[in-house]
Image 1 (spheres, rainbow, N blue to C red):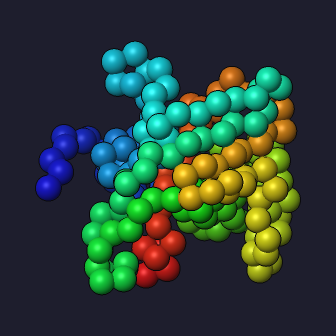
Image 2 (image 1 turned 90 degrees about the vertical axis):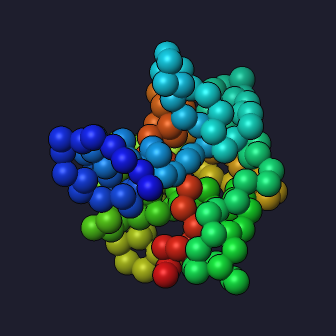
Image 3 (image 1 turned 45 degrees about the horizontal axis):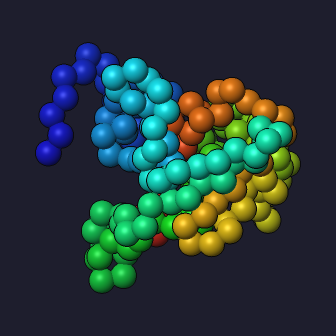
Length: 174
């Protein structure tokens, strides 16, 4: 049970659709991303990524995920038992964030013009989605790289937003 005193109506709890502060406050209690804001000073701290590095050009981020983190038990998973969160789950979630959909209000504020191939993927998603985002690569189950079109001082803050949270494909499809 989550009890919270909010004056705004919650609009949605689907990460890519969140544009209001009331929904964001609650989503931050439910979902996690690679990084998050430190509530004491708003610096970026690890969330599901235990660490990350940025190349010398400032364009390729490599995230190492924590091992043993699982999605909450739910009937959408085999046997109702939550499974481990993997790099492929982030890739899937970021593809949702780069898909032209009535349920996606955050592409323009997140990956548009920032992540290599994100704009192309978005345009292609207007038809039947096909392929993947060139700048997002799964290295292994616990390693993900994201390549930007140019260095961005705000990119980690973007990843700390509820829109960049990880979701399970099984849950979305259910």
